[in-house]
Image (cartoon, rainbow, N blue to C red; front, side, top):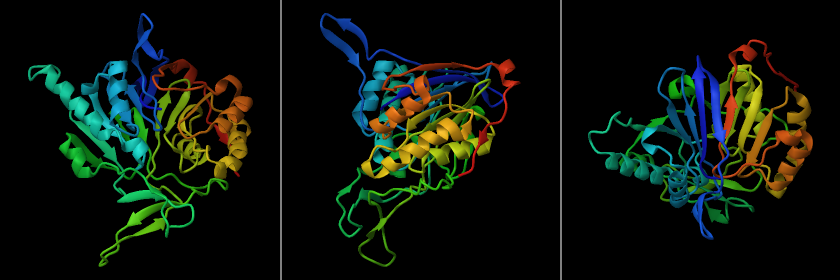
Length: 350
């Protein structure tokens, strides 16, 4: 799912308005030809627009999808003001999330160039917020690291990002961005008993000091993964978890511990699609539906969630499980008065 646009207003660190409005899959029809289609692909990208009341908005791009063409096409289709995007946050070093970074920076640079030197306001530089532990390579080896079945497409390097006009910022700890309106997590604690990492033979390539060749090593946990969270007044947390390698229950637990706020919405890939992870669906759904109170108002499962998990979530949450697709925009209106009557969530221990 590539590029969804999310807009909102922040007040004292709490969003008072968040907009993700559903768009049609085309902008106009000319005869029988569909004009300006969105491009879906196996990846994730969301544009988050936040605004402290009375101030200028902040635009944050969370992930960029798998490659150059889909993000460029969706930017054009959705009329995204790329020159206003001041930060790209990469959730983790996998190419289906990092693959569009260079393309986005190039599109942004071309747009700024077309505006001319006298354009006001002057477009801000674009920070690219990255975990410092960039792998040399990652791959899949179901039968062990001695025989790698496939290597993932390479992530852009720090140098390539800088050459494309990005300002590299390496952050491994949790931190607030967008004027305090968006929280980017640090390392996600692995606490849930059934979310014990990857089983498919995920591997990572390491160079050995003093050796001419490196080696592939099993990598059960993707420790560079981060989530993003926004606090909406009168609603609670809107959590973006692009791929949930850490486990979506671990992600939600950490967000609740960090903010002590109920969860209004979960958006992203829940990583429950592959056959070796199907056993996690039932306890995940049970956690959302019975072990956390209140339950999330909405879950928007996409990317690596899988159809079986979506059906199970819909059965448990009903209309709270919302189908999601490329081009989606949603509106969440905050209410400061309602917020005064909200209580902290209650989460049962495993």
